[in-house]
Length: 371
Length: 176
Image (cartoon, rainbow over all chains, first blue to last red; front, side):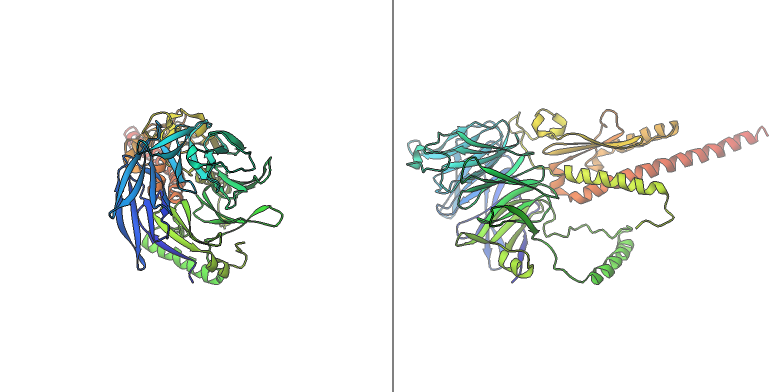
């Protein structure tokens, strides 16, 4: 079985989202549209183009159960798209923001969604049946642009990351949710209350809750990733400094495994041992350990080839050794079995959509174990 | 590995350039960022400098008289180079050469038309550039540019001096 499948869809992909049964993927090709591709056989065909935004679409999320797509854009709008008669129809969301919308996520119960904005607030939107539109409430605790949001599995808590160097956990309970579930942060958390504020060494690029909601991980621009264990307060925060460039998005494969992707164009695997300590395990996009003799002769050959063809002295390649040729900006689960993600997809600024198979990775590289 | 006959300065030059390369590679992690101050606008934050939290600390890498200033922000990066000028002729040559290049800034894409105060030439790299082009090739281009400028200017100075000598000789033959 192959480790990964690569598909070059467009020149540059900003974000992507899968539908419920993972047969279709919605991407933003770094412009004002949302493209929906469906898999026909072994190739991807463009099925729908959703055209409503005026500026670049920054984020897309596809609710698996209710089959609705929400898209946000730098034109300070968000639209909820529903499939009617084979066409996707947009409904404007009244966000009431006056700056760009940067990130959007459906809540686990899909009755509301959160939009991170450049207006230093998070807009939590719910469907108002009286007026037949999506209304919003603002969470104003941030001092700069909010870059990412992620919902806790209990549908009430929200983790946010911002360019004011902080990751926060805020309460986002609305009347529409019914009785608020109790959590470690208290019985009843007021809407917009910041129950936790964690410092990061730079702009926070990604926040993610673990599947159980006991841990929250956030990655910041100082090339570090921090894991906060919130099963008991005060939370214990563990920070890992990476040797390379910052991470842009995170995905928990299970409670003890996490994949981070970023400007190194390589998915990184982190693993938690039985004491609860996280460590960096390995990068996932590497060539198998082939013979060094083969690489020596091929690099000499490449040097002479480049001298003849391009007139350059060095043997350096234009292409990177990783499968992604530019930063990876988005990661999403594809196959989830028993709470453990076994396949995930990544998209990046190079326009590639790559689906990775962890079982094949584990088989090929002995030290890569997903717990 | 460097050949044993290479001059001693070559190793220091390489260390200087590899330091600059590492700095620029780290600073080139840019993302699309809508303006926080004006709605629906998207500006390079390193040029507007309005939101202090979006700017990174500026860094100067310098070696004797030549230095490189790297200013980065969340969606843009500005690299300014001050060329080493050992005598008056090089001052004039550097100024003319840089003017020649900056007048053709469109062809270079990432070149800034006016250098930053105190430097000879500046580059502005935005997230639009890193989305369209390979980041490692952009870094290669800038490092190569810096190497080539030094070589070009010293070549031009040699040819200017040689020409001056020839012209003076021919002129003074009259009076010999």
